[in-house]
Length: 242
Ligand code: SF4
Image 1: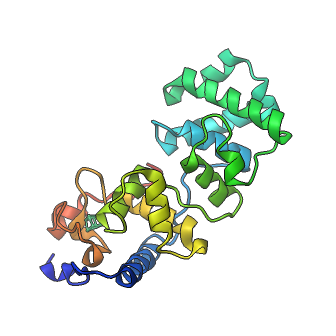
Image 2: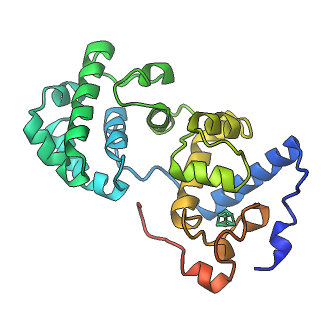
């Protein structure tokens, strides 16, 4: 891809210029991934909270595979809190770290029953008081389970925010605030999906497909991966959940 791709990124970019560039990138990613959405399956906020916790250190595809069995056995927080540990360990076993994950589900469910009458709370301040729930998980639940705008800074989001020059921060909470300041709040949840989808499909951690990237002309990190279109296209992933 010719170097013209870099003309849109100025070394002396102003804050207003950054806001415009960031929003342009998000609009292009929205066109590129019109069906971007959370790739974990869920029917309600409780399921969403559990599958988000379970998705640590594994793939969404694997979590989606155990979800039907898990919630057929334990449809709500009360049922999960009363679960037999050995049975629960057997269900989440395929996800790895099964003892820690079982522990997390039991403690989480017990806290929801004891402190929130069995219902997942819809406020960030309450969600982060639950055992094992940090801001990332809380924002996933708010954005996708309650329609409350939230920025999800997972590994993809953080990497892309830095490559795209939205922020230099590495701390997830600082990334969340810095990137959030560039966009209207109503766009936060979909922005998260767009960056995460782009990270999973094109802007990979090790070899980003720069030569096949729809936002290359606005990306200061263009060239971090192959710029030859043919080589880059071969790196794209188009299948479902990672
Ligand atoms: S794939 Fe390359 S050009 Fe595209 S966002 Fe990632 S680093 Fe930038």
